[in-house]
Length: 477
Image 1 (cartoon, helix red, strand yellow):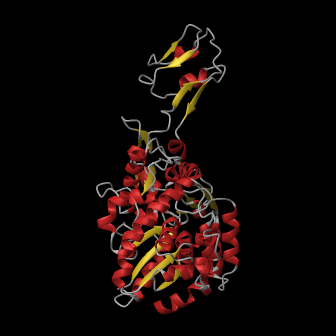
Image 2 (cartoon, one colour):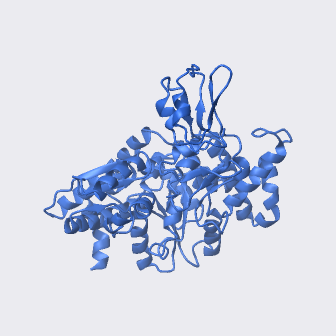
Image 3 (tube, helix red, strand yellow):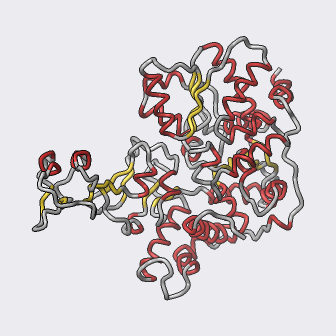
């Protein structure tokens, strides 16, 4: 039964599962140092050069599982001891070098980093090279290649570099916590902090929801996850963990689409506010456009605010595919509504830490939202929902969206907007390729996920946005 895309995900899951198991049992503190031995009991290493290094790295993973470095505000962290297997990378001379006598590469190098051996083959001195790339541009044989590390390739906003010890280093002033580097690192040397202990503590202190109710708000992309079971069983599994009830974030998406359509018509130009990584990117890289970000809360916060207005003492945990949501829920504007955030990976670890086999459970229906709220999970869904909301509210305004699939497309649209040459009036920004279904916290990634989200949307009982939010509007009147 395959639950994850990669073995790195499975390793992270095992640490989370064992940490959670100890927490449920009240034995975490006394067994904290034993968790690496429990996960890697054999004296024969299976992943690293020796079992001692293997366990040392596992110890660092346990630290992330219990909350990570409190002095680092970013939820994405580097495990330095695990980041030592990738080549230094950068510009390197390949076997395609023919040992020509023109030496154009040497002529353009201002750092004298290029020398030649007795066969006139070029070599680059890494201690002098500043990675300008001029040598690669002038080589007639294209013999100089830029070999970037997977994490650097994954980070499209250039927030990752190498520190003095050649381990990856994250620039928090640039990082948007999208988690692309987390998913792409082949050694799992970059990971995100976990808040599963907070969730377990909340559930246990609720005393079976007698002291207060603990709600789970699930992202619509859940429909493309846990492929070994059906969605209704997943919802039953969440309740079996001790949650009082499960609510669709897609209903918050309906609420967001309803308000965002009005705001767009009023202002004439808008960028979306649903993806926290995209919002962070605008604020950090295009601050002049920050005033154009929709003032609506994200669907997660929108539905949670409504729930808290009805039950101020309740606790709300968001479960989704997004590492950036772990940053969003700590913002002052969101903190009053969301108490914790975990990913689908962490939800799987929680299931197994309590030995909840969701395949044996009956189905619990999930029927809060409309088709349009549910398709927020994939790229283009938000724009479709805003267009539908304008139509349903009889607002005479034509939305002309630019749908950005991934942060590179976001950058292109924002650059055009900053130069006043963007012809569209609404930027739907999704930092992850494919939208939320491409989030770093997903169990699985792939094109099939989009079809699953659309199928899930068509199963919605409420076919219009206004029908879905009618009970909410009624309570506000």
